[in-house]
Image 1: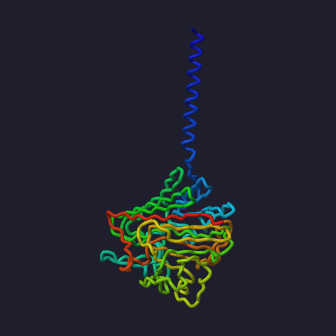
Image 2: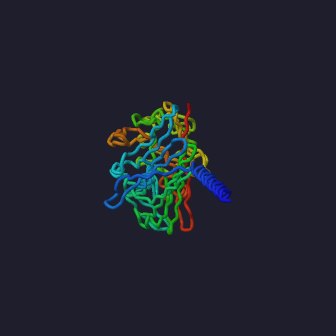
Image 3: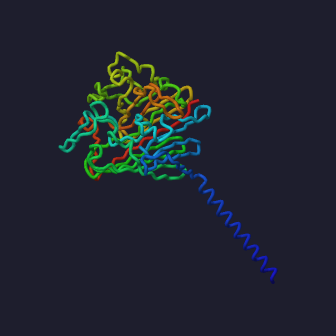
Length: 387
């Protein structure tokens, strides 16, 4: 009888052990696709406040590092045609580099991206004055725009890891009306794309134009300019500007001008066209292109191909326009990652957005956000390789 009891107990123990191991296996399998978001110190914003660097990974080997300081994309690795991963965004090795006043490398831009003429606008009959931080005009949210604040960060682990950033801009901050609650979510997707979802609400009528200011060099290494990059812009019009880079109000067809990128063109082919007034004003390309598809659907706005590496960057957006900037004001005075000096035109920007100076130009699509409304836009930067 005792032998039988011992046999039953042994079988029961074995059964329980098998069930536990099976459950453990299922649990492990269920989390194998969950990719962690790594966190590390990134320097002190002040004596009592620490900035953090968050690293997103996908299964393909791509990594994107984002800081809660300015919501800044600090680095972004992508493979070339030989499978070699390189960092393809300009930036700094530490927080102190960004605090020195670099030109918005990888940062979130707001409350209003791009320029507002003479640093002023009128909304609902009331005049608002902004800091003039770009000649006679306001640029990228002011002296302390969203690129210079510490966002609240929430990492979200999973098969496609995300970083949610939130910030509330106070009524009157940098001269803008309304308490603006902003949420930006970066998601590193399986197909080597980074999706950026922007959302904002306000308690008072205000103007909003959010974007990201990443500087790309698809060669990697930061040893050369971007003039051999081939660019396509799905835009049949652009916004001519005056000498201070404020739109004149005209939507000019790109056909027959150096601004026609409806078919792939090397950046360097026409960037120094001394006969073109707009090239002179921008010192190259620093203009807003009006997308041919003006709907709020997610559509392909731009693509870039770098022939040496084979890297391809595609930009999809729900926005009506894109600012194409070719690093014309980089002058070799900034030392970036790895001690590399960022020289003239070593990076390009593709900033999805509404039109510059829209608060002062009634014919442009409105950038006004009112209480009860929600500002929502999405932009996707997707990398691939052409062999």
